[in-house]
Image (tube, rainbow, N blue to C red; front, side, top):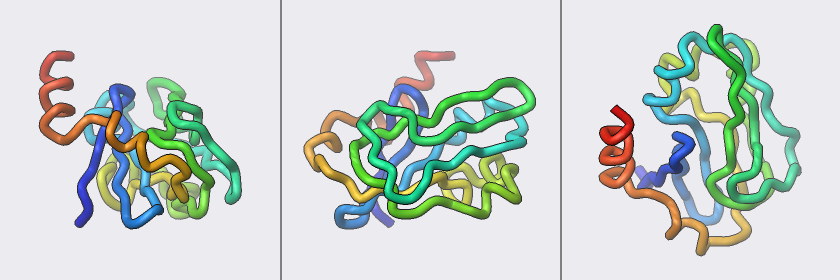
Length: 125
């Protein structure tokens, strides 16, 4: 299993070569409540780091999912279209949103490690 990094907006990213898988953290899924709809990007879409990559709607709110790194969308989790609740059931696994072919490996170093992210969410209360 590859190392994960995290953002202050509660996205996670894991790298396998130059392909990154992106999802939201269990903390984000809990804050959202029951997810009822996921709007995924089109294949081939180019996204910038911190740019909107997807939208997740829950019974509480609609929220953007931001790309932690720049790249081109090479895969989306179509299973979420029919079963958006997978985001709540397994946000760090089967509830992933998209995969990017990254364009700037250096952006990885600006993301939080697991220990840094755990410390960050403790500060949030």
